[in-house]
Length: 350
Image (cartoon, rainbow, N blue to C red):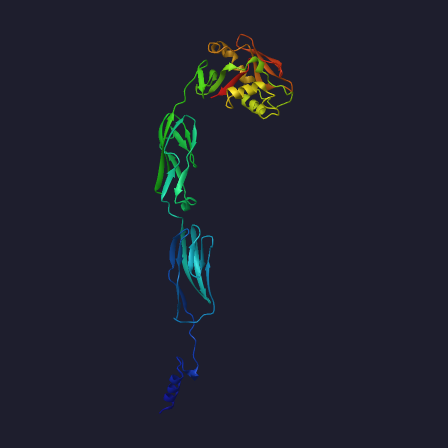
């Protein structure tokens, strides 16, 4: 047998794939292939990636899974969990080679949108907050809602569902999330129009209109009854309350309601609360002055005296008093807080 043949026999006897000197050559890793190169998941969903190493059966030293953005997707032993909408690249690193999979995370699909109201009756200038519930609840965090109205001359709606009634009529407010939507039918009634001298009633309490704006829809009302003489005392406390506004009787009245010794040290205001409630107040100086130019009209409905107290405080012991001059005007006077008066009229603003 020739010499070369003897060498081949020896190599096969050693079981080697490379036969020089009977030394085996270990195959090197040539590629890392993941089972998917792209996947799309919804938030909270999982998917499992598998892999193949080439050549088959190759040995390796290290293997590591990682995510390019763990706020979007995380991975553990090939199991990918979607965290929040966005994109992340899942990488498997084997020694010095890698395989990658692009993961796109979508928000949970919206199945329905429901409104807290489906039919509403409002008056002009009223406001109402509509609240949209997105289902399933897991999708609510990511849902983008768009609000619209069928007629902005009747009702408008803000980007967060606040409906404002504009004028009498009907409109439909719609909230949409993609192709899914819900609707609320809005009926707007016109505000009534008043004139000075008209009787105004709210919650069973009546008054006479003493002032209206140009629209006739907003104004101020004097109560039909006044505080009894023995109860008509501004204050017995002798303290400065801060009720100093000449134009805002509501602010003055609230200052009194928050004052030390209230209500017993403020008999007239106690009567106001017990007989008319917190929505009524005692008028400030300029609000009382509104009555004198229309005194003859007002007196056709309710008798109003010629000396009218106000809620405007002067100092610890006195407050402002107005005296009718019988020609549509008045003069200012000072009145002691502890003195009695039967001319405290409650006021309501509409």
